[in-house]
Amino acid sequence: MDSVINLIYLAASVLFILGIRGLTHPRTAVRGNLLGASGMLLAVVATLLDREILGTGGEAYGLILGGVVLGAAIGATLALRIEMTAMPEMVALLNAFGGGASALVAGAVLVGATDPPAQTTVATVASGLIGSVTFWGSLVAFDKLRGLLLPDRPVLFPGQQMLNGLLAIAALGCGVMVVSEPGTIAFYAGLVGIASVLGILLTIPIGGADMPVAIALLNSYSGLAAASTGFVLNNNILIITGSLVGASGLILTRIMCKAMNRSLINVLVGAIAESGGSKSDADAIYAGRVKSTSAEEVAMLFDGARRAVIVPGYGLAVSQAQHQVRDLANLLESRGVEVEYAIHPVAGRMPGHMNVLLAEADVDYDKLKEMDAINPSFEQTDVSLVIGANDIVNPDARTDPESPIAGMPILNVDQSRTVVVIKRSLSPGFAGIPNPLFAADNTLMFFGDGKKAVLDLIAAVKDAE
Image (cartoon, rainbow, N blue to C red):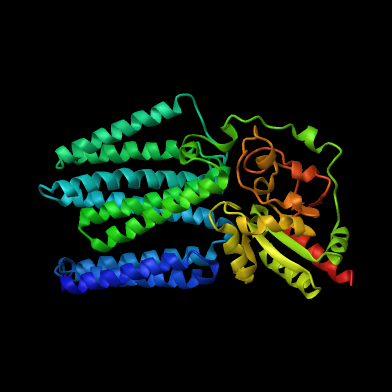
């Protein structure tokens, strides 16, 4: 039976790897998700075949079945009812569940163990520490994104980093005591408590601009906690799965940091607005220079355009305008305009947020162009339509070395012949700084809700026939 279980685990591991590979591109993402889910189904079945579970009788299976039914009901309800704008919060919440489960399972094993080996106690410490940090850190991220209790701006106070360091030392001290005296559960409880406070304090200084990086990092943490719990349980598939999630999360975190020109340490200890750069005066930038436009004027621009680029941002997600944007693009293409979508890696509030939104609207994957691929073509673009994006198109990142976002790679929409920005107001983005693009000579501001503005554009383009 052990050989059969390990063979099934091996097959599940292969499916996990193929699933992650599929998730690297929108075209194969659905297939990758199905492969990963199939691998998890195999892993669950194989685990239930384990002789230790088989020998417990029907009572254990009844509890397991109850947990499966309850978890499936909650998961299905959330998946069906969640709005695409709330997907980042959903990811943060799932990260929290993963970390919390790892810490609880490791603690349960420690309570029931008699003279556990060093591998088990060390792995238990790692699982409790990482899992607790992940659970509470992810809940803070969820709250910041949801706007329930904490603001999305950084929460800072004097001596914060020193306090974090002391808490980390105290948590490690409790971990040493757990290894030395595994029979005293109070040390593990202390470890979990201290790590929980540390998870909160590590996440509250992270502002909205850095939230995509934070979510990717917390996802990695949840994988590492699961891998540690795998060592606690001597479960190969949990070790493999956790390692895959942990490694892929770290890679994604690195990609996100590079896309924002941020170091990981910088993200963890402060906020983008606190990086020491001076903020420009919005009045000095905007006063008398912002040009408002209408749907009819923008339709005239499209009427003479050969190439247009649509730049989606968080405002598109908030207004749920992805289907209307697709309809506008189809309408322009029927009139001979070449239309592409410029996707910035950190647009929105989680990695791949814009890709997910546009995929939901059945936008052709080949039209979604990554930043490095589309930036050279902006000089040949007649109209760039920016919908709810701010910091990712702010030219200060490229031109002002003292800007808080200096060096952050951006979409070079300002090099287009004409830029049309759909936005409710001139309010700043997550970085909290004004955007000179809005006052540029080649920029027109179309103020209003994203969905309504795009619907007005569609009507105006049709009327311009």
